[in-house]
Image (cartoon, rainbow, N blue to C red; front, side, top):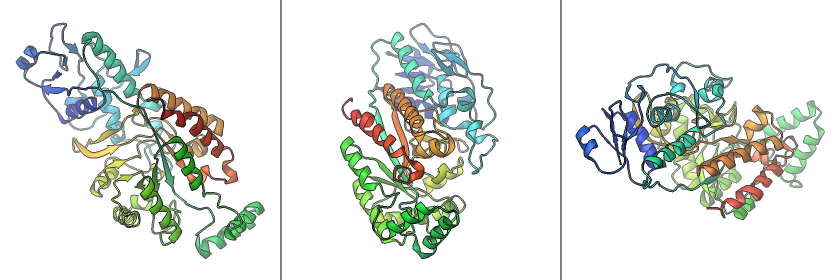
Length: 439
């Protein structure tokens, strides 16, 4: 298949590479040779203002993919086949799908001046998806489906690649144990705070856990293992391994033998990644230090990551990850609300907009995090379950990739999170279990 354009830019090549991965069985090749395009046999896509006969599929471009630099874009949303679209144009599609896809995947808007949230992150309220009400939809995948259907009308014999739905569970181990392995000072401080606040049940629980009479409320690891085995699923585990426990980094100390054994077990059993500390966002050398420590304990190269508190800033954070040897990052989502930050439920390559080039870093976007539901959206377990199933259903229909984030602290037996453990087990047994039988 040929795509004609007056010029080939890194932005255009990036989007065509994404389309090749997601849609086409036969690779789309870009050409600037008008005669070659006119005389070619087979399906052809015209991405220019050049007029061609009716045998050519036409997508009229806006300027975005042929520009350099970053500037505010004039975006007006409208509805196309029941879904939001923008960058309206003439042609066989009512909008420039390639430019719109590039805009959301590159996170173009995050390079523009914007407000930050209380944690210094890009505030989701800035985003076009939030303002226009499509944050809960993997819009790019719906556009691709519309594109596929339109192409089939023009080229009935065109074949497309088959995509399979994937449900990927992932866990952020911020604090492995609530009471155990804290050391004398932190344990004494915990007792003192509970006594001062009159939290006598917590005092009793802590005492019983330390004496071995009761399981730590954050220790749900064996229970999770049983569910994974039942559902025939291999999840991802991301470990926070900050050497100093300060601020938002409250992980179990790295010199605790039980913590090292936990990491060793999961690195041998499932897929393991680094959960870069909050401190590493202010001191890039810490990222390398934490990654190297984890590699020694896990006895395997660490090539996956997810930012603690979803703290990242484009392009700086991703450049640091690439430099540190990270190949796959699972941070593309918001730490303040559930939904599709990049409007997609497929993995995609990070495009460095400042350098105008594709990179080696592959992004795996998540759409649901239990901490968002509990702390930010103030959902009940029932409300969170309804949202979770809604995402699962639409992503399954699109044969996309559903990535969710969970925390052992929320899925344990801590009384603050009553009902969340049961909600998760219901999701696993009634939904995830059947995924293995429906491909």
